[in-house]
Image (cartoon, rainbow, N blue to C red; front, side):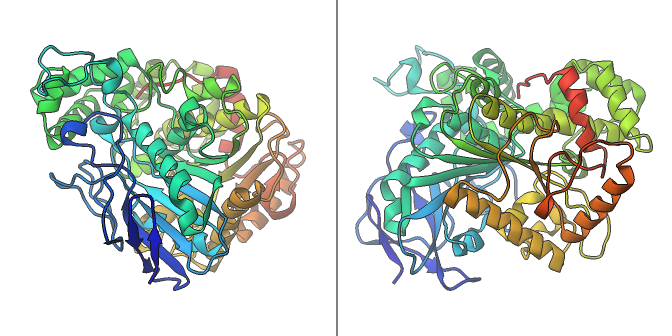
Length: 545
């Protein structure tokens, strides 16, 4: 019957369409709906139920404006948003390792129902897979000011902790606590949990890896394309003032509580659009993402990069990956400013405090590229690639065990050039290349070489979750300085890279290829491998949303 017993009650799942040996249990509440009297507060336990709850469809997504292919959209009144999904082998042996996934989406959109994140293939590889929804946008990351004299609920708690920052992260911790308390009923081991995420989901994972409150809830972590964005309370409060003004309400607890979720979603969009239309508005003009984790002094005290460098990651083992052409996706979907003139590029560098040597270094290593590509390469490193690599290095240098990889698949099944851009790696790792909704990300329907690469990447995730071994050696020094880095490419691309390395050997020391795409230093294919020395010299500014 595929019925499982949780602490809150019994649930019924369904067999996965692609593999009848896998049971999918969908839309399972891990916390109570975070609206009404619970709005802007810590997540509360889900109410228990009688009988068997049908869990054969995804739950509602968090309030957002996005409508994503293959996933449900949000409508006002969709309140029961704190749900998760489980994929587990129907006849598994029990005590299986667990992989918990946090989706990306700039902290304002996305959900666990996206076809990219179907857990069937990974569950078939011996894992119990959990994906989750948490609060996004202002509901999850907006700063709610201190006490009000006009709180609308008589007797309401006015202590600062009653309306905490980082509510989205607190939701994720609640989901991990649900996993700790319930996953054994689904054949998983609460002592063998790996937390994984991509983009804003990866930075969420990094935050939880250094948060005392999440200590012991997972032992390993996978971070793909972590984003460089972390706010102080003062910065978050300024964002609240902007959003409240756009919503036409006071920037107070009472004012914000009076604005329904859809009003704050619309106000957020208006604030972002204003930044996008104003080239003089500073850093937010280039990619107006205005929410992110906050150094509230309670859950988080510092950017994860600084915290990892100080040893706050403890014994958590990391697997970190980024793509080699991250920001090209943001340009393709129109969410990034178009930089096509020298004046615009100079303004971009000045807004982020990037030295001229960094800009010129990128230009020199991309001699035939249009100016837009120079900008996209700089922004790729600034926002994703360099930040992700430094997270790995910081944890390794603090004594942590960490593996580093880069995704560099650039040919589709027809041999045409495609971008190894943001999000392209995730359908490969989940084994979901067949989904039509991901074909834009990966450059069309997959070929046999793509499927083979997907199997290798899924095995690496499974190996890391099961044994702590993805298939190559852990980082033993700064990346690009003799350190082991796994480069994900198809076999044909590996052969092409080998030939380029041989041709380049007279000019380059090192770069020796080892088995299965593992290198001591990336080979010459493309210029992005050689930007690390530029960033090491220039330094990486830590950004706020």
